[in-house]
Amino acid sequence: MEAMDGARWLPSGKPCGIRSNALPRVPALIGAGVANEIAAATDLDARVYMMLASLFVVFKRHCLCLSVQSLVLRKSIGGVMKIASCKRVCSTMIGIVLVLCYFRPAAHAQTLLTPPWLTWLGNGTHNQSCLSGDCVINDEVWFASYTLASGATLFNTAGNGSIIIRATGTCTIAGTINTSPNVPGQTGITGDGDFGGGGGGGGGGTHAGNAGNNTQVIPNIPIVNGGAGGKAGGGNGQAGKSTTTVQYQMFLSNGSDWPGGGAIGGRGASSGGAAGQGGAPVIIVCNTINFTGTINVSGGNGGNAPASNTGAGGGGGGGYVVLAAKTYTADTGTIITNGGAGGSCNGYANCGTGGSGGNGWSAAITIQ
Image (cartoon, rainbow, N blue to C red):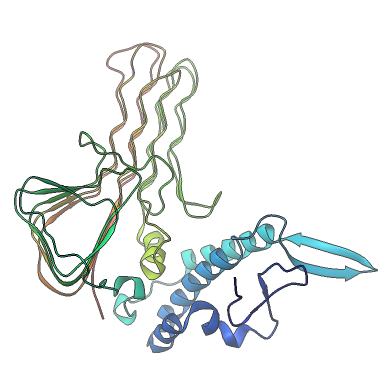
């Protein structure tokens, strides 16, 4: 593995050291394309936001890839080596970036160029469409053009995965794309997700219910919080939080290693109702988009309590939808990003209901 320009290797052979005079070389760290976008921004808010979001990715990729034993800070005091772990230093830096992004003034969207991951149209390798019945895409696929005809339905059956379509030509979405786990045979997100809604908390029974999962990219740094589990004695689970604009702007600016969607909810107490799974993302990047159909990335509903003294399951967080095109023939379709409903008690005693999952989001971007 080679260090990026502007980064250095420590004597121990571990990467992550940055020269003290590396600040003017930030473009080398974040990439020339992103640096050019920052320079081209005519608004100070836009430049600040893009720099912070880019630094977030730098810290993630070039620090957290190391083990806890990787050493990045060494200082000799009285002949004694003082050592700080890479994990502690980088977690602190990332926390600062997140706080600054949260409290920054709102940037004007029209001053931001489209980030590179939303301008790549693929290489047109595949030439197929879904003209009737049920069709499946379990991965990122690059098309010359793609048509989902009215009455046809597109699924992802692999589980914990997105539907990502890129096309050098026109994408016509007149049918239904469905990644919601509420559809029979469809598996949603069974973990944390990333920038979708938080999972709803499970209801309490004899014991306390399980909390809904937080969404996160970096371990132990939540993005969207899940709901608390219901207290023992039949307390109700709390709703998961919905994704805010500030939270998903970072995703739009930088993308993700692999889009994760909404978080799973919490299971009801005492072997109670099942947790609702998160909704999986849908991302469509084409030269032209003609969207008149339906895209459903809603979170899964929590399971109902099976007996007295148990709790109902929390709903899964809603996923998200990103459309990006140079031109839109139509953008009048329906997008469903709701969090899943919490499960009910069905009249059972000493039972708490499940909290609903947080809502996801959608964005339509014109490639510039």
